[in-house]
Length: 335
Image (cartoon, rainbow, N blue to C red; front, side):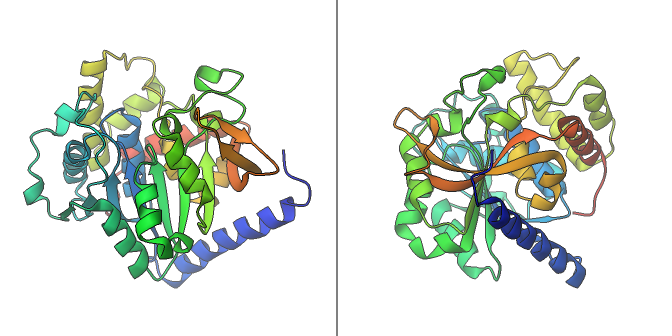
């Protein structure tokens, strides 16, 4: 569903973004797209898979991982343990805005014993300030992969408005036509539901670009039994890290890995940060979107913000994507 007159503009922008990345790669194999990951890791297993996907990617350079919502220090400990297992504890961690002491999350216990003072990449108590620093110091547009509630963004926008045009938002958020479990009508999606006002502030800001992967394209993403076996039999640090976090999560949540993983919503957030890869698997459009006070994502051609949205999978695209990431998780790469 493309807005009349907008398809050419969409194609030009996406082709330009793809070309920019391809040009950088031809200039230097060391040149990767700089990203910040904003995450509520610890609540569910999908953030772990999304972060490992980004760390394994040849296209992305993780400059910072920032925690968001509830007890953000406890979440930082989960990141620290995950990144150590990956051999990527060079990546700085920022502690985002804390809005509760809630540590009753499935994976918080997995990282509870981590000592943040010994983390090699450094842990920054003001994660929002560190986000701004990374964006300001970058010679390129920085992608912010937002895979949690948007609780850090009002502060970032208010305190550092100058960085907003120098960053792109790539978020797992919203529900356009399809909701949880494939429901119609759409659902109030969790990352927006936790702070609808935060998403409203984000949409009103002058970002370089905003791209979403809503529930429409992520509600059913999971690795099946064969793909899980392939991943767990791998000899990579990624396989070791994911086996550890997934085993702990399933002991807490009593999930059965015989048939498939829990839904991996957030891995599509990493996918869309690489449009040259994402367009291989998913179909995009532009929609004018707003978020109402209840947290619903609403198409509004009068007041809405123009957003790039991945709304459907290409034929066999979802299966091809999960095959790809299962192989990626099981394979050793030079990190």
